[in-house]
Image 1 (cartoon, protein in one colour):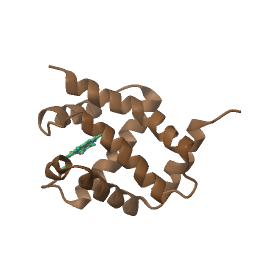
Image 2 (cartoon, rainbow, N blue to C red):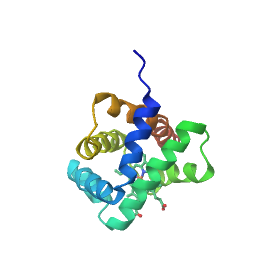
Image 3 (cartoon, rainbow, N blue to C red):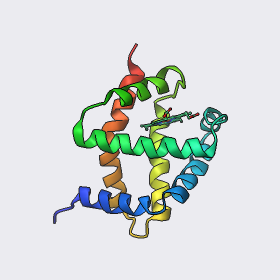
Length: 136
Ligand code: HEM
């Protein structure tokens, strides 16, 4: 049996884009609840900016999955997380886990394969963010 992870990702991502605002808001509640460190990092960020960050984060990672080219702006975002925001790389795992937990709640056709399709698609972007975070 063939499993088309691109199709699983595209269908579920397309669905989420139709109710983006609620999805991102739910993500942030879960994300900041997941750890006091995360809540602290976002202390000075309003919900509008949080949602913007998630929308951009997912779209940059999807683009990177397709092209494997880190555009200059994506490189500077990764550097911002390392230098100014000082994000511990472990938080990228929580970011992805929270994204999947939110998806499971919002997407009626969610199952494990759909979750795996998101992990596969976002993995290159997460690896890139971690790579930058380890540079001296
Ligand atoms: C997994 C990959 C991630 C990507 C691709 C990503 C991407 C972004 C982007 C595009 C922005 C907006 C920057 C701007 O336009 O000025 C941003 C801001 C931010 N990100 Fe991330 N992010 C990721 C993970 C995380 C994680 C795990 C955390 C913290 C736990 C985090 C914390 C922040 C904070 C605090 C801001 C600044 C928000 C503000 O005050 O405006 N990010 N991120």
